[in-house]
Image 1 (spheres, rainbow, N blue to C red):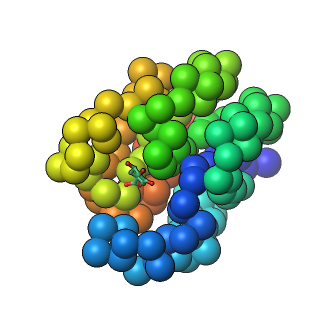
Image 2 (cartoon, protein in one colour):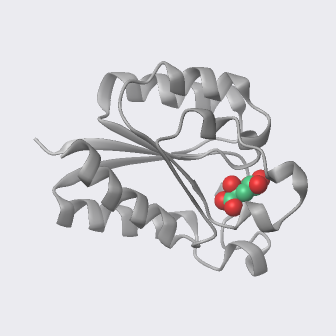
Length: 145
Ligand code: DQA
């Protein structure tokens, strides 16, 4: 059985492709999901892909990953910068965690420079567009085998 990687997305990422395309690009979240599933297949991994606009929804997706998944790739979106609850949930997850941001948060407003999730993440990718999800998956392969 291929190892399962949970790919989790926070608020407003359902609007990817429509929302501020000059920052986030024109690919949709469905495009990203498809590309991740295809690469996972090549790597001998399996993926689940979810998005929630609610902080508690993201927490519950992380709890579900505890039962099912070898690793978590997460773009917590705006909750990156505010959510102790998401950090705590990730601290209760035992496998590797990679944080992904489509935009380069360090080039943007100063409130985006701090990440609670980075206190837990084994790696962080920012500013590489949606390709960041694919690079995170390749790293996951190294980490979970
Ligand atoms: C984001 C960056 C966050 O600061 C922002 O709130 C998002 C998306 C990114 O992928 O670049 O919604 O996580």
